[in-house]
Image (tube, rainbow, N blue to C red; front, side):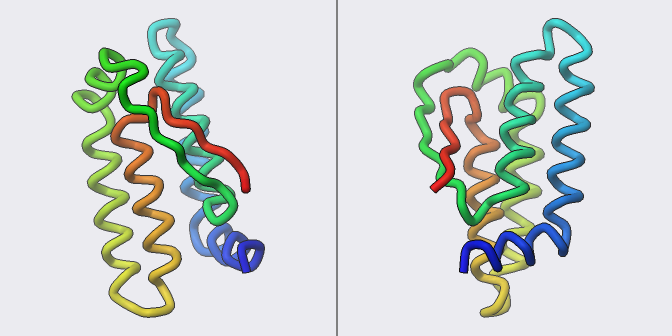
Length: 120
């Protein structure tokens, strides 16, 4: 079921979302000061490719200063977008598993520094 969910996810927009996060990560990594944020965006890209096989373990206390800067400049907008898309998917019964993956992505986008994403 996870493989089928990932295939449907990739075909219906997951590849595009992963590509956008990857390109954003590259743009952030061009500057030296943006490298930590670029690495987090690469994590989101990997999560956006295989959301049904990835588990997010949060450790929000690990880097409080970086997480605070992330929230101020990037995180709130990305997380709100993910939560809105997740809510739209959860309107239908068929879309609930995909909405839950958007919620997982949104939770990781709030405090990405210290969060571990592991394949199951």
